[in-house]
Image 1 (cartoon, one colour):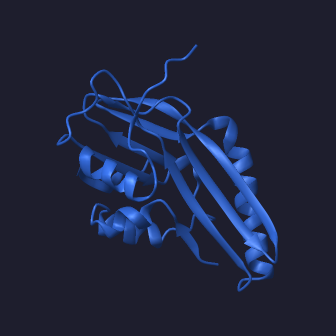
Image 2: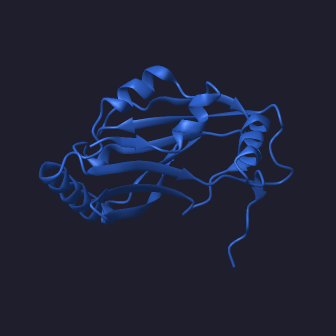
Length: 179
């Protein structure tokens, strides 16, 4: 079964994705990796933030018309000078069960099973927002206690907004205050 890391494809085209980390990621099976080790670390400039509940991991697969999918909100973890997100402890059993189900599908029908692993990160602006030339980057860990490796090289906020608009989005929006 071929798994695609969907959100990375557009960023890879502009050279922002670190090729060494991408190669290591491609060699890692998201069906075998311990989800307790999945961790995203975002290094953001002033004026840009990631709201609680705005970062998700999606694992999905199809086989002969059947679909298995799980969307897991990543929990924020305190980390100096950055935002770190990982699969919430309460979600680990469901994610592990989904991995096992997809592994069974793959064993039964390797050619007819396909899947994807996606990470969706929703950023928003605070105050006057970030300076257009301010840069942000993202690191990724895929094993418990493992070092987070550069995934998204430092990219200017203006370039990121340009990419969002090219994909039909509206760019970065101000954060919405909780009621």
